[in-house]
Length: 224
Image (tube, rainbow, N blue to C red; front, top):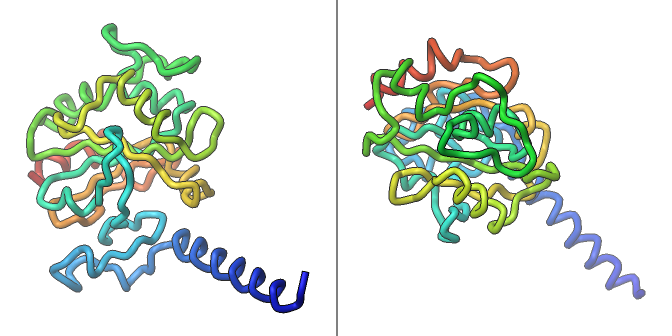
């Protein structure tokens, strides 16, 4: 291998690493604060992870129909985002695996006694998930092998739980560069994004910043 070719490969490798690092950079505390611009797309680059009281990361991902979806396209609706690990017992339960008319995905036993978001929202939020002003977005970050999911795996998950885009329930395919400690620490749980595309409540992870039952779910109705 010539020195020139080796140098070119090194440059390309460093460029790829730089792009990957930018995608995984935590959101700046002040730079993305809501209210700095009327356009969420302009003020909201693709950073990760989402930051409370900041514009949500505006990523373009594939949904369960294989169509590209930009998260900011849901602006104007209240968005409930659920980071998903397919092997997570709580994720399975929140999606409905404990309901009589549904079954778990794969060989995972859902967390006992934990109700689905469809059941929890009316009880603690006073509103139904079928409300057209609400969008449920499941962001699948991990497949059963704890790797980035494929479109086929996401489609199988959506079919298993009856999640369809025409019901405002989107299941999105997470990217490989999102498989990191930030994503891992967001499972299980939910995030609540208001009509202006700002993250208003975060109940993700085992030590959530906001309580699901007393903060996030009651806030849904207030944001409609």
